[in-house]
Length: 233
Image (cartoon, rainbow, N blue to C red):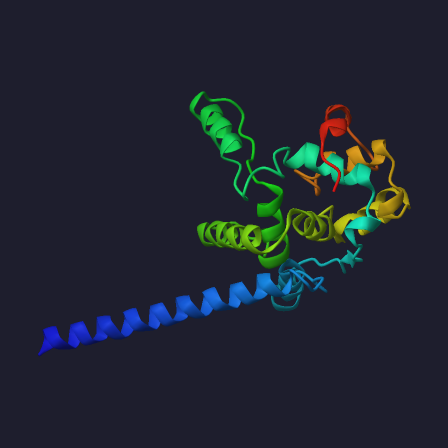
């Protein structure tokens, strides 16, 4: 009898898990499909930061966020971001396995660690996921990356990334970054300004285009050198 009850309980739990999993799959499919056509009015991380403030009295800065179509963002910034963050953006399918291989070799050789996140992966976490660090978030990021690459064209991926990426505390997207750092619209950024904005992306809360360190200026120069070879979208 007990064995039968255990089997019944296991079956009930398994069925419940499968139903929950299917529900999550359907919800995420709908999310990604909707944003193929709809510009997101906010990101999940904006909601998360506000909830942390309301529930746990965490510090909070009202985010500056203003959507700009891809055609209204400087071509210099598009090239600078691709040069800085994902030079194989147009030829990979969400995961840059060449970059991952380099990172793994560096780790094995004891060299300094660097990230291997693609623009698609960063778009996935910017729009759909809160800024937390745990294994489940990485799994969700990978899942969203697959869906994004299946449903969105590369220009749409870049457009959403540029509008939702974190460019500093309370600064969401290219327009807010351009206005904050240079008092310009995203469409009017020069090559030097665009390269400097792209240079801070790995650590936008530690580095600032307003007060660039010597290291940041070197990053800017490397990005400027790479920009002419980057695609125009």
